[in-house]
Image (cartoon, rainbow, N blue to C red; front, top):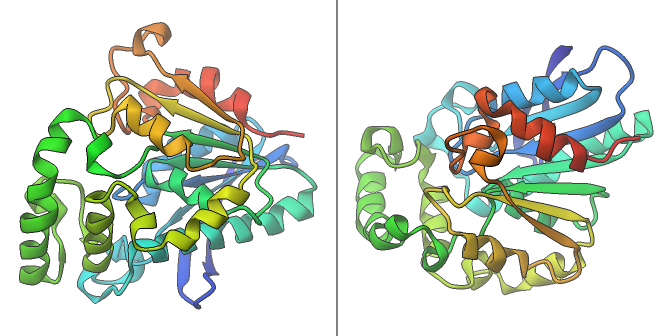
Length: 283
């Protein structure tokens, strides 16, 4: 397995950083791992390397402005949440070049926010999609604790913090991670509305309705951020896709917990073997 650092352009010219994890021989498929809202690209390296060892070429990427070591100070970023979906489109386009060269299928693995981006990929030729803990961001379908305190975060804490330091300092606040101010503000508005991103962009529903990619939505009852109802609620935004809802039960796999992000941690690689790999498109 080898790695290859890359950079590719979104439609507006913004550069998006990525890293390929490549098998030693010809790939049997290409996979893009789209990150969650506040997760760095490196968080997915173990899953990507594991898949590469099984013959898949895997692209991880980082949303514009999300990691200072890649894009510079967060306070200088003008990115919005909608821009990040466009970065996902650019990642799919970049992956498509390798897909076409190798003549193999393309799978999209979206974690939380990254799974939502499938709605922008109707024309990207994705053959299979696995959404992991990817539901609506609307607080009304969040886990009970999040539903209770999130209005305070979106209406008071986040705006005040962004005004003070020029970005959202999630690490210092111990709530999420550091994020560009524009991303956090827009995402917050969406999360306070039942229609989520469609509250500001109702025209996007047409693109979601065009998606016909077979989807597996993996969820777990011990998710600390979103509820099972959130998964079901979001799956209805893809009316023309065949969506398989699969509950991950930790005990069924010899685990004690999975949670919102635990799926991608190496100690839970049994989930990759039993739930992920069989659902990826391979030649």
